[in-house]
Image (cartoon, rainbow, N blue to C red; front, top):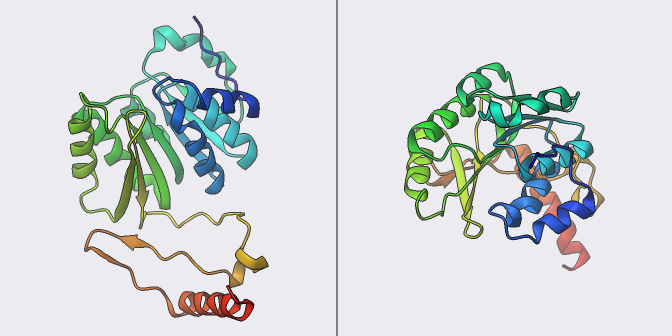
Length: 237
């Protein structure tokens, strides 16, 4: 059976999300996160439903999905189907990541699951990530794989300011946020609270678990937050 790499339609992603395949319950999550980040550089390890989901997100953000799968024999026919917003590399992740310049906004990793390769992939990815960029790793609560996966994440992120959480279903999805990357955060086109213009909206406060405490907000950021809270109090909620 051949794989169709075309983006999901809205109806198809909704149907797929209610399926029973390993990643199905995470599809809407990664779709939402990619759009929320207004992700332009999106990396996809392992062809499948994630590829179709990320390509759908890229139709909204205008970004490009860079997919990597080492099964050349199985997927060679797809090389002719590449286009401006979808690039495919059928080599190992090592050479693939050397070719990706970055900065990277969003990553879904669902290919190798052994300690050595996951650690290598993360070590190559982290220097390319934006501040507040996200790396999602699947199977971090799958019984046979989780120990290697969690150990690889722990060891690869030493020296980096990161935070993470793991969704405990569909074999587990760990969402790793880079709190301070080598590239600045990407401005997003999100709707501002209470109609505030982007330059007056409260800025996010980076959380760092390297020392167990939040980073200090800037004075300007604190003033924006206080102004926003004052509007809430005046309005009575």
